[in-house]
Every structure is written in C-alpha cells, then in structure tokens.
Picture 1 (cartoon, rainbow over the protein chains, first blue to last red):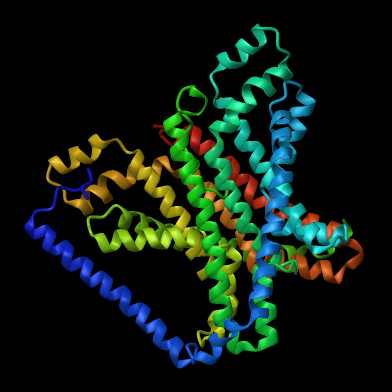
Picture 2: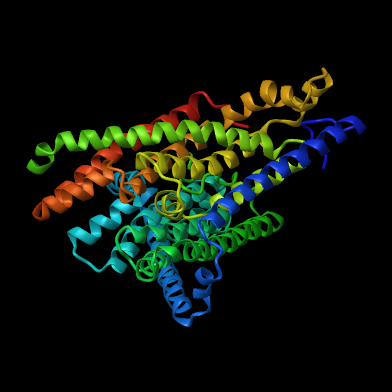
Length: 285
Length: 216
C-alpha cells in the first residue's frame, strides 16, 4: 500500500517495517495470551461454564433479549423519522413564531442524555419501561433526524426552491415535492449512521430495567451464578456488535452507492458526518 | 422548584463529578484517538490493522456494554478498582477514542496532497511529515466535529450514573427516589445542569467553526 504520506519503502525501510509489524503482532498476541491465561486461571474456559449454551432456555432468553432490543429500536425509528421530517420543516419555517420555538425545543432535546429522557418518561408518566425506552429514543433521535434533514434541505441549490415557486407551487408544496425528497436522498448516509446510534442506544434500556439483551445477561448471571457471567456476556456482546456492524456496513454501502449515482443528480453531496453521535450540522450563513 | 434549591449542593457535587469524568476521559481519548489515527495511516501494516480493528469494534459497541464490561465483568475476573470512577473513565475514554480517531483520520484525508508531497520533497520522514505538517492542519479542520464528540462525551458520562458512580445522573436518580412526589422538578433540574454544560460547548463549536477553523 502506498500513501502520499511516505515514500515507497525501499529494502531497508521494508525490513524495518516488517520487523515492526512482527514485533507489534507479537506484542498484541502476547497481550491477548496474557488475558486468556488470566481468564483461564479464573476457570473461565471450563467446559461446564460454556455448556450452558447447549441449553435451549439460555438461547431462548438471549433471543428474547435480542427481540426486545430490535423491537424497541424498530418502533422508535419508525416514529422518530416522520417526526424528524415534520420538525425539520417547522425548523426552517418562514414564520418566526414557529421556527424559533422549534429551534429551542431541538436544542433542548439534543443537549440532553438519552438515558435522562428515558428515566423522565418512566418516573414522571409512570409508563412501562418499554414505552420509556421508545419515548426516550424517539425524542432524541427525532431531534437529530430533524437537524440532519434541515442541513440537507439547506445544502440544496437555491434554484430548486425558486423553480418550484415559479411554476406555481405553494411554499409547502415546494418543500414536500421538491426539497424534502432530494434532502432525504442526499442525507441517506447520515440518516442510516444515526440508525446505528439509535440501535446502540437501546442498550440504555438496561438502566431503566427494560428487558433487552444486556438485562437478559444480567438476569441469567444472577440466576445461574456469577460463574456464567463471562460466557453469557461474551456471547451477548458479540451478538450486539455483530448486529451493529451489519447496519454500519449497510450505511457504508448506501454511501458508496449514493456517490456513484449522485443522489438526485444535483451537485455533490455534502461532506459525510464524522461523529454519528452528534452530526456536524452547519448553521445557516 | 423548592426541591431543586434544597438539593443544590447535591446538584453541584454531581455537576463537578460529571465535569471531572468528562475532562479526564476527554483528555485520554484525545491522546489515544490521535495515536490511533496516526497508526491508521502509518507504513507499518500491523499498526494499521490494529487501529482499524479497534475503531471498528469500539464504534459498534453500545456504551452500556463497554460500561458493563469495565464495571461488572472486570471486577468479577479479578481486576478490581478502588473507585468505580476508574472503570467509568476506562469505558468512556476507550469508547470516545474510537470516534476521535475517525474524526482525526478524516481530517488527515482533508489536507491537500501537496502538503505531504512538499514535506516529503524537503526530506522529512513519516513521523516528521505527520507531526509537523499534516496533524497540525488536520486537527484545525476537525475542531468542530471534535467538540461535537466531546459534547456527546459529556452526555455519555451519564451512563456512569447507572454503574455505581455518583455524578449528575446518579444523584438525579437518587434524588428522584428520595422525593417521589417531585420527580419532575428533580429531573428537570438535572436536565438544566446538563444543558449548562452542553449548550455552551455547542455554541463554542459553531463559533470556532466560523472563526478559527479553515474550511476546505
């Protein structure tokens, strides 16, 4: 692999780099070996501890946990997206007394930890933990979706809206028929990246005692005994991470596909969001 | 409202603890993240591989799982902490470093090719090119996203409240339990103190973006 940052390595540099690679790999393998040894001393790898995965009910509980995680994420996404669309329209409304309060609400929602919103819904409205988790996720992610879509709309060439108004569409029709569809297509990578964040955030349900995957791990460890905590945790974490990596890959795939098809055929898409936690949304100039 | 004023010392205590967690984890994550980004573009294949793997896994790990690992699983494996703050800082900085590494890497990619070519043509080696020419420029362009990551870090530190650390969220939960009839006021108070930290940071991000950072 060549890079603009360094010269194509000559024989000497290649040797140094090879030695470096080998030493680095050995160091990392050594570290891993040390971890495995420590774990083995704790008796983590005894067959007895992993034998629980031959039991059907363990998998059933894990399955329930995954189901709870995915259903909360799916429901939250389905509500948050339309809500975000609506909020983004209110956020760029031409009427001051609609735009400014919306902006305040969005800032408020974006500046708060999701888990606090979940706890708020849970305690203040006395809902079930499922409703609290979904409500917390919806409130936060609708605000983020709204900001992403707003950035998309404002990144469109001005001519799009002008042309819409010129052919006699009302302001609202122009937003709905001309601007929104382009903005959504253009911001698709950021929107999918935010979906990964949403999926990850369902794990906060653990804190408000929602029976998602991590809570299932805790319950099983409490029930079966501490000896089984590590194996169960390991498997559950692997499942969680695998699901997230799949959705992340989907985001990357959509981004690649989008860049070749040049979403909507208008200009270049704005720079990709770097931090999925809080998308970089530029203020209107 | 009364309940907030009565408990103001607790809120203050929590705010300081949240600030402490965020600042310490933030500094560790910035250093670790920059090193990971440097490893990601280095000529040594093993470093590139390690950095890619680390970022890919940590970015896709829910923060709660990282916390659960540091605060619940590690102690039961024999790694015990005097204070749970240490576990929280480990989880937060390991998690945040992955996002910082990605941001810095995208900054490195945004520096024009000519910069690196010019540096190499005057005889600099990889370490010099990166530390003297590329990183200073890259870090400037990624200041706004970095601040956004730090805002997320402040908010993420709330998860520590569920893992035995008494910070803003932890105290909030405690106070909500103690004042069952005024839960709403208590939690709105917590929200207010979080906004006190995140909104100024957000304003800072947009100011820096307009004034200091160079757009490419």
